[in-house]
Amino acid sequence: EYKGMSKEWIMEIRRKNCNPMTMKITYYKKPVFLHQGYMQWLWDFDGNRYLDLFAGVATVSVGHCHPKVAAALQRQSNKLWHTTNIYVNPTLHEYSEKLASHLPDPLKVVYLTNSGSEANDLAMLMARLHTGNFDLLTLRGSYHGGTQQTMGLTSNSSYKYPIATSSGCTHVRGEEATAGTLLCRPPDNVAVPKGMGGAVQYPKNYLKEAYQLVRERGGVCIADEVQTGFGRTGSHFWGFQGHDVLPDMVTMAKGIGDGFPMGAVVTTPEIAASFAKAFHFNTFGGGPLACAVASSVLDTIKEDGTQQNSHNVGTYLMTELAKLRDTYEIIGDVRGKGLQIGVEMASRDPLSPEAMSEIFEDIKDMGVLIGKGGVYGQAFRIQPPMCITKEDVKFFLAVFKKAIQRYMDKE
Ligand code: PMP
Image (cartoon, rainbow, N blue to C red; front, side, top):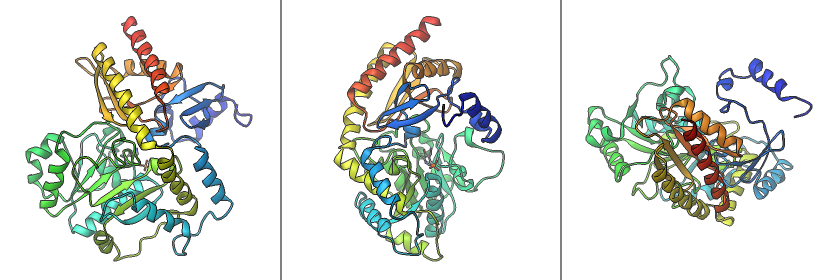
């Protein structure tokens, strides 16, 4: 119970007073009622503990209620909550410098927002203003936000409404981009997705060639690091690193605040100058609470060796999952980097939504939360708080094997 409210009562409120779509996406047939978290663990109303391998959609980065981050939030909450950027508050400046130090030159100008959608929305505006062009390219299957502008970038059909959203957005297939379809229209910007499709990776040199084609036509390149930033890919701090490219803008959110609402765009002084023609105002963006939290997240990533852990534990998990893929026919593909992992469930065809749901529910009932994704809902997503250990991975693998075995025995 929560404050004397029964589960039935809460579900009744959900039916009556909450966004009706939330009923469709309780995610589980038997919904999980969560009320407490610590590092990689979550507890439900009945006191059951879950290993969290989805981190509230790849959002909790260093751990639920990480003691250092929680302490930073508490300290700031007793000092100052809000000023807006018209006054000078040190938190925003301390954080902007710290964040910029994590990005290569010339990406040094920081705009703070409250979400990933807001960050991408802002990046779209800046890109259009700076280049004087209008068209944007994103990849099919991508998700870049739910505001009317970013919905144009988002190509995943589940998030599309039958209404014109932002025009000028073209969704390209990977092979089209390299085979020259980009020549058909003068593309201006390319946003870089990774995540909702189930950690789909770029073919070798894909990004480099796409960036080149876009720039030859006077475009700029935006890396959407909402899911992949802050050490999640293990080998690098940002997802674009290791691809031999340098974006003109980087957008980020989710892991930036370990679950505290926040987002950012980091760009070059040149683009920032083009954008300085009008006054850009955001009441909450870069507020003292968010900056204190985000600053502590960056410190914690360093102090806890979070990125290295992401690499070590992620590589171990990928290796073990690859063994399962070779054992079980229904695991079609295992892909990802660090703790951004997708497991495609398919033999010849993608596993049916019913089958996916059965395995997914079983995994939850055995105490592990993972995510779902992919164009046909055929991929499992593993994007945990980056503090998980090898022991946690062993526990998950045992659970995953058991769920697959049980499903196959029934078939
Ligand atoms: N970009 C990517 C890659 C995302 O995964 C998301 C959220 N799933 C967003 C942008 C939008 O972020 P937000 O939900 O914070 O608006």
